[in-house]
Structures are given as C-alpha cells and as structure tokens.
Image 1 (cartoon, rainbow, N blue to C red):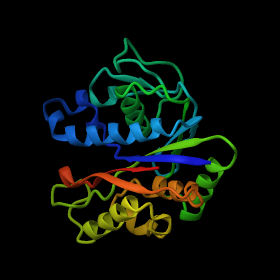
Image 2: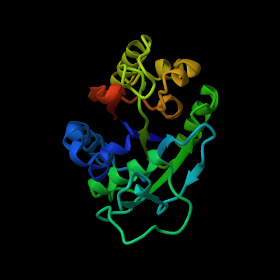
Image 3: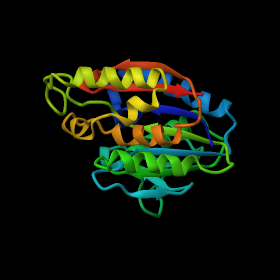
Image 4: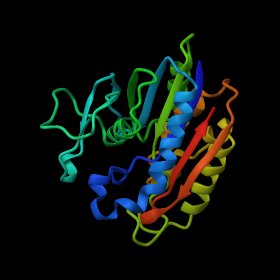
Length: 242
C-alpha cells in the first residue's frame, strides 16, 4: 500500500557540481526536495520506489545499488541508488547506468543521507499510455508492504522564448493544472492529463505523475505543494503527499 509520495523535478542542474556557478539559483528547489523526502522518511515505509522518465521507450526496473553518473555533463560525480556516499567517486561503477532522472533522484537521496528504507527505481517511457502508467502504479501499491514513491519529472519546457521547447502559449495553463492536482492530491486530474499535449510541451513528468495517480487511487493521501517556479523556462514542481 502507498503511504506517502514526493514529487520532485529532475534537471541535472539540481546537482551543484553540474550547475557550477549557477548552483545557488536552485537552492530553494533543493531545499523543497529535501523537505519532501523528509515526509517520505516520516511515513516509515518498508520500500521506496523512485519513478522517473527514461526517454521515449523507458528502461524498466533499476534495483537498489544501481549506478549513475553525471560525467556526461563534465563533472566527476557518480551516484548509487539507495547509497549514502558523498556523490564523488574515483571512477564509474559497473552495471547499466541510471537514466538521468533516476540519477538526480539518487543524488537527492544521498544529499539527505536517506536510510529509511531500501530503494528501487523504475524508468518509464515518456510516451507510455496513461492507462498503462496507472496500471504500473497500481502494481506498485499492491501488497502489504508500506511503499513510498519518489516521483521525478519536470513540467513543461515551453514557458519562455529561451526555454528548451521555445514558448508555447499552452504551457502555463498546463503547468497550473498539474500544480493544483499535486497540491490537492487530485488523482483524477493527474490521470486526465493529455499525453500528446504533454509531449508537445516537453513535460517529461507526465508519465511518472500518472504512475503516482495509479498507485494513490485508494490511498486517501492529502497533498502539499512545496515549490512552484519556472526557471530557464521549465516548470519545476515539488510536492509531498501523506
């Protein structure tokens, strides 16, 4: 059963070494993410499952201890899903690499020294059908274990002329709808998000949010929005459900 969920954005810029001189610009977002992870820890879960976008096709499950890296962004920072290191390592670890969204999650968990429960990851395709997303969430929440979710994903990337997706007049309204759904733990509203519109707006969080909706359908959780902004023209949202 689902006992708590945290929703966080997943730009690699959340990792200070990647952001370099601009690291302070996302300090408030990092603090909000840490607060959301505190809500997860307080729920005393038996398992934490991290769900994040992994390209158009997804990459399936990533077990506790899976390795990720930010070396592709020019910094010698490696992470382990569920690890508690300092984020720096002498070299890449063996095994398949975590998708970027789960690597950011692994860094966030290391940053707060997560030790509340074992951690597993699930990479989902950004084009995954909403019904399939909800079914995946239902499967996660089935069983007697107390499960917490860390749901990674950005809102639209089309909020300004310099945004990755350029300016799209539909983006602000889409992000507002998502923000209100996360703030009120509105499962139906998340399920109803338009997958094609989300893809057009480069909103990579759509599929993970709909996995959350499936998992939380009968959980009776309440929501709180901890952060809402659009730096660099990309919508970043942080929420906690408990």
